[in-house]
Length: 431
Image (cartoon, rainbow, N blue to C red; front, side):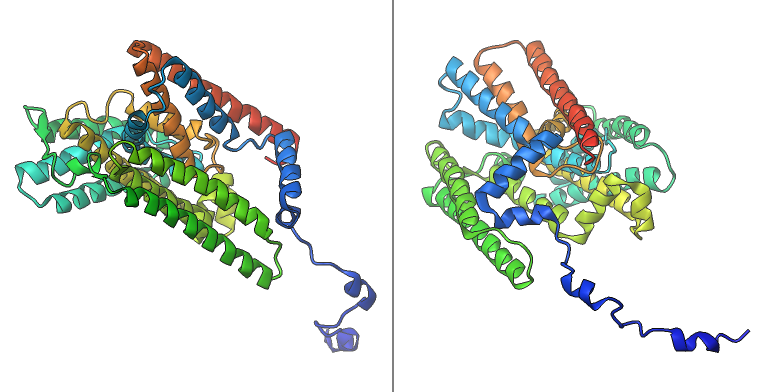
């Protein structure tokens, strides 16, 4: 029964069986990476391939946003005025913040129906602590955001640990936190906020110095170019296909045009809005979290396949709870911006069409309802579409019911495009 007889026929584990074949072997490279080395021609070919495969990305919403601007500007020359654009970009922040949290949940292929009520409850909690209890406003804000995150984590616990459907859990949360908000607001139902306080200035403070807007634009462009250039150098050093310098320069120039045009527009009115700066900072931070960290890769993996993620060693329960906590935290932040807009916390906070708009913004912006595809920048694009439509219709004195119907039509169109895209990708073998 001894196995020593076979020892003479065993090869060293490092021995090359076929040296000729090994010498001719070439390391496999993802063909999509080679696009970077081919420059504009490579990107054009990749663009055509994606269109055929149904990978539309954010193209439909960008085209839609351009059409919205053209149509409403032709109807009313005030639509693209500096004041109207400034008002749009400030108004969108509250809903946009909530939508950023929704993007995280949608990436898992789930839904959170409680974010509207959580936003209202959090703003009410901040108002009660700061105004009624005399707590420093900055501390009340931190506690309100922390409360939103804890609420979201609680929803995630019921979903991830106890196995209750996210739809049912967050629907219960919608009702519970709405009741909680009404309870702490008391019989009066409204708590006025100091317009000069921390919460009040979230949407009313502007950097009036023209250097602020142009300086931020220059900083954004410079950071983009430096990070892109250094990233390319690292790829080259590692022997990985990288973008040609002309590609980086072109991208930087396009970003500079958009950034400085926005800065110029802001400086024609009151200056750079604080709300817009904060929103952009959160978008950049969350985009980095999702695309450049191990946590973000786990979120995308979980949205693609729960079972595959579990077999890969990902802690599915922890990721699910953390995603709902993020959604709750962003709901609270959005609620504070919405309270700042009206300088009060009242019984209507978090109600009405807020939930619909927050979810619609994420979906319209390009985040898939089926999970595994989307970016937090989608929230920006989607909320821009929704708020632009609202302001455009308002300039034309269109009735409120029509606004709802048009927004619903845009949402339905987006969902249909998403569904058709997934079918096309399956046909192309890329879903």
